[in-house]
Amino acid sequence: MKKVFFIFIMMYSFSSCAQETKQYQLISQEEFAEILTKEIQLLDVRTPQEYQQGYIEGAVLINFFDPDFVTKVSTRFDKNKPLYIYCAVGGRSNKAARKLIAVGFDSVYDLKGGFTKWKKF
Image 1 (cartoon, rainbow, N blue to C red):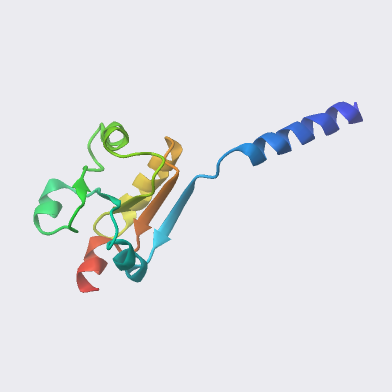
Image 2 (cartoon, rainbow, N blue to C red; image 1 turned 90 degrees about the vertical axis):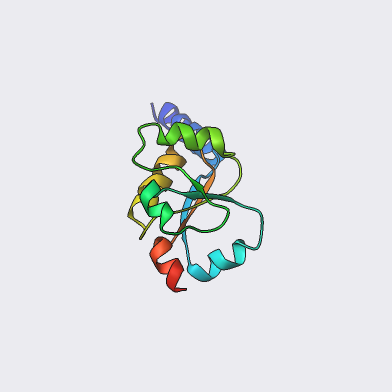
């Protein structure tokens, strides 16, 4: 019985090590500014009304409250490349990042403080 348990634990350990690590990470205004000098996947998860009041150049708007949010993001962006997201202050983008990691995005970076803080930066 001990051997069976030991084998089971070893198999589980090896299989969990072999899985890719998906990551969600907050990114500072300074780090974000440096990254914007490169070609990136940039997602704005605010509403169209918020977007009309200002946005970060190069961002694609997909409303977090859209019932097809995950599907639209998944068809528009490459899951294997880093995805940078933001909302107004950070709440929706945090929820969006977690949803996107759950459906297979490898790396999602969330702008800390959102667009509101970005405007003041």
